Length: 144
Image (cartoon, rainbow, N blue to C red; front, side, top):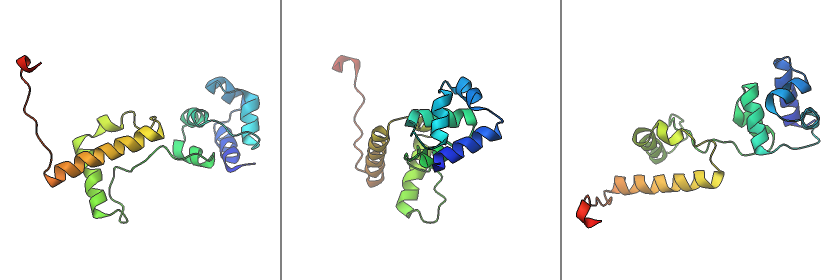
């Protein structure tokens, strides 16, 4: 039995659910759930997320146990002592500049988009910090 299978079974049993109960609630076939629990099949990332949401467990714990990368690319609480001062400053800037709007759908975005967005945000932050941010004059209606 894989770590994922063991964890999935444990979470299902904590909810006092049979394989069929979990299958009915999630739309994943009971035979597939049983096979995942025994380590015979690896689920898709979407299936793991769907199961985690229904089982009300940490999505990243279940994803990592299934061999996937966690959903969180960054931790916006820069209180970790091992975080470099500039990194703390950058994360604080994201939190203050963009806040909840940024993280509304961030976790469900594809990894490539997350990485590109973080690169773009870092570029914006560095420009603002260096004072090289060029402020363009507002366009007038006749300019269009």
